[in-house]
Structures are given as C-alpha cells and as structure tokens.
Amino acid sequence: MRRKRIVLGITGGIAAYKSAELVRLLVKDGIEVQVVMTEAACGFITEATMQALSGRPVFTDMWDSRIADNMAHIELSRGADAIVVVPATADFLAKTANGLADDLLSTLCIARECPLLAAPAMNRQMWQNAATQRNVAQLKRDGVTILGPASGDQACGEIGMGRMLEAREIYEAVASFLQPKFLNGKHVLITAGPTFEAIDPVRGITNRSSGKMGYSIARAALDAGAKVTLVSGPVSLEPPAAARLERVESAAKMFEAVKKSAKAADIFIAVAAVADYRIANPSKQKIKRTSAELELKLVPNPDILAWVAALPKPPFCVGFAAESQKLNELADEKRRRKKVPLMVANLAQDAIGADDNEVTLLDDGGTHKLPRASKPEIARQLVAYIARQYSGRKNKKS
Ligand code: C5P
Image (cartoon, rainbow, N blue to C red):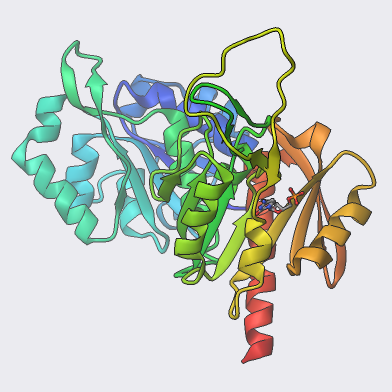
C-alpha cells in the first residue's frame, strides 16, 4: 500500500506542545508528516523540534525558496491524504470558515484538494463565543472534520470546554480517518474475550483471554467503514465508542446474543475464547468448604461459530484457533470441521493476553502468514484480508 502522507499545520496556542508527541506517533506508524507552522506557533514550539521529529524540513513562509516554483501554498498539500491542524486556534477557525488566506497554512487550506481535520484548543469563553460556534458550524457544513475539543483544566487556570484532545486521541482519529473504507455499509458481528461459567454465585471457570484481539478487530472494522456489533465476555478494556456493545458472561448468553444478530450480519468473526464446558448445575448458594472431595459435573457448551456457519445463508465466517502445538494442522482440521471459509491460527502461549501477535490465515487458497506485530496492526491487516475474501466470494456468487 502507498505510504500515507499528511500535512500537519500548527497554529499559535499553548497546546502546540502536544503536536510534537502527535508527530512522533504518526511517524512511528509509517505516516509521512510535512509540518507547516504559523508565525505564532513558532513562539510556542520550535521548528527544530518539529523537524527532528518529522524528519523533514518545516515550512512557515509563503515565499520559501526551497520550493522551486515558489508555490509552497499549492505544492505542499498536493498528494497529501489530509491536512490536520493541531492545535487550531479560534483565529485559524475564523479565517478558514471565511476563506481568508493571509499566511502559508491558511492559504494551503483554501488551495487543498484533500480533506481537512482540525483539533480546536482555546479558553472556554473563546470556545463558547457565538462567533467561534458559528465558525465551527460553518466549517462542519463545509466538510471539515472537527476533532474535540474536550472539557477539563485549561492553561489559563480555568476549567471548561476548549481543551485540546490528547496527542494519542488525535493520532487514533487521524489513523482511522486514513484507513481505506473496505467494509463500507457492511455489518460485522464479532465475539471477543473469555466466557465465565458460574460454579456458584461467586466462583466460576474462565480463561486468560484479555479481549485485546477482538476489540482491536472491532476498531479496525469500524475504521474500514463497517457497522459493528461486539458481543463481549468479561474484559477490562475500553470498548470502541462506535460499536454496538453487548456484554455477556456465559457461553450460553454469548450464543443468545449472537443468534439475535447473526442473520443480519455480512461477516461474523468469532474471536472469543468460549469455554468448552459449563457446570451442569451451578449452585444457587455459595458452596461451603468441607473436608470431602467436591465433584463438578461439566457439560459441553454449544459451538457458536459452527452454528452460525451452518445457517442456510450464513455470513462470511472467520474463526480463531489458539493451539499450543501442530498449529496449522489442528487449525485446518478445525476449519473443515466447523465449515468456515477462513481460520486464523495463533499459538495460545504467544497470543493469549499479549499485546502483540503473529498469525497464520488458512483458507481454500492455502496459508498466509501475518508476521509479528501489535494486535491493532494485525487487526488492520486481517480486516483488509477478510474484506478481499468477502468481496471475492460475493463476486463469484453474482
Ligand atoms: O474452542 P475452539 O478452538 O473450537 O475455537 C475455535 C473457534 O470457534 C473460535 O473462533 C471460537 O470463537 C469459536 N467457538 C465458538 N463457540 C464455542 C467454541 C469455540 O464460537 N463453543
């Protein structure tokens, strides 16, 4: 895939220090960042800092002789995937809403061919001011994406709305904005996390699944334009705000939730580590300790994935196989038994609870390895692969 390129505009506000961290995060993600600063921004953060972090010369002036035809205001944004202005002052918002172009950054914005994103940062009264609100509404009508602001402590000592989002939040918004919309309009149903099978009101059987892989896939699917239903076992992760979340505990409840959504789903991704067994007769009261042995009778849980795959018109089904040995062989056997077109195999000892992963995709076309990377990165690659397989199938059928 072509390397993404953004123009990062910095205007003169104290939140400019956060744009240094933002550049670091974007560059680390492989995104090329061209920094453009206003004169006022240079009073808050230096060009040298931004040049060192972006690895590229910084532009501040309309008449910069480094651009051969002296058209910096046009050239710098050509080929860019977006202009992102962080922080965006009240003055910048006012100028852009009214089409003023009196410095390099505002001129670049009016001459752009790409989308514009802006993260406002200002004192709460400046933010609430009727003119600012009018300008923001106008910018939104013009198709500009406004990121934040948030409410909280302000540099002036006041507390209120107008505080800029944190660098990581802006990075996530930009990274998801830049993702190709492979799954536009598709409904993706995902199970994630472990299940908890009650023994009595306080005890139960569960496993070490953290939900990180499933939640990362939910985020990647949303970023790819999908509508996402996330059926989650008990985990301590922040769910993606745009997903429809159904929290469940037991495999039986997970099954119920999946049954409700499966028929309307285009794609089903079963990431959850569903308990194979549950307690036959969970006790209504807390079991008391005695010196006698205690026997628990376990009965098998329904196989949610196999049930969905056996529907008369199943969604495109993707399973996960966590194995501790003979990875590909066991995963492929599982794929055939559950009759799913795609199985994602990972080593249980490597994957469960970890922040990164390494997976092998198995389908009718053979095996395809995704080398070790963070779970969000694996999720992005996996969603792109699923989208290709899904549309390939659709095309074959039609
Ligand atoms: O547990 P097993 O190795 O069979 O899991 C393989 C796949 O099947 C996973 O995608 C898992 O989410 C799914 N599964 C399920 N319901 C079960 C057991 C597994 O949906 N009861």
